[in-house]
Length: 337
Image 1 (cartoon, rainbow, N blue to C red):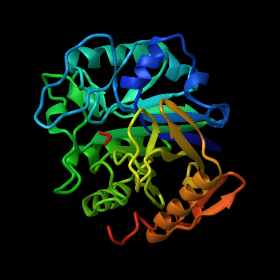
Image 2 (cartoon, one colour):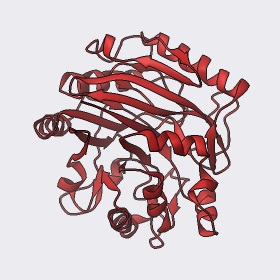
Image 3 (cartoon, one colour):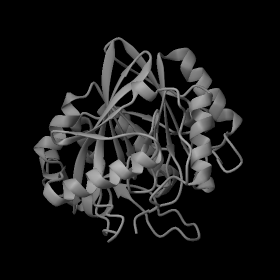
Image 4 (cartoon, rainbow, N blue to C red):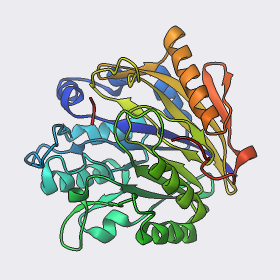
């Protein structure tokens, strides 16, 4: 009994992407045939939705917050058409246009048949895991974000599942992972952690990953940096970006990424197959030639620093996860928004 889960990183459907969605456009305009085919191959698809979905609300006012992302309501239907089963909203953009827009986001996604995790009308809903089913396997998803604290859901107001990770894993996260394990065969934890534009996970992120694995996470898939990081099975430290309109960092190349496909069974993740991506302005397609080689070389080096090896296989980059399952999260050195 095994399933394939496609994981995509930060998916920003606001700003320039929203302008395209407001014009007559289709999912084919935003994602190439090869990218769509890879998603269609998967039994389950999950991504980090880096915006709210609404036509209402006012910009969240907070010191030092320069970016506000809002997608039109039809974006929820586009995600469904793309085959997305679940999105995490535990990030620093779910409340970009306030509580009203977050409520709309939850409503539009529900109407489109897309599950969501990591945000809600009150604290219990924001922290509650979602259980997905495919191929006889039950997969629970736990989502959290370590920023910003002012987006945190409370007993009285909507918001995200906020977790301060600097002092160690909060007790509620441990409890959520344990509860998820009671409900499902495998547990995916998807944290929005760390700052933008860093090449490697910071030490506190590494510690948090180890704690998540120790308390029962079967697979950890993080995001926030806008550039992909290496793999230390069963931890995918950062999925990178999936679609956006961002300016390109000349060295970190946030316009080059990965679409991740993880094969799981009741024992956990067994194999990772990743498709190198090229992110153009509001369009994502498979990377080619020198750009494919750049992704290969960077991913290979990043994984090597964490003790994992990468094998090119046709157009993909493959990491065998099962052979090193249980080694933890690895040990070593540690424009957009």
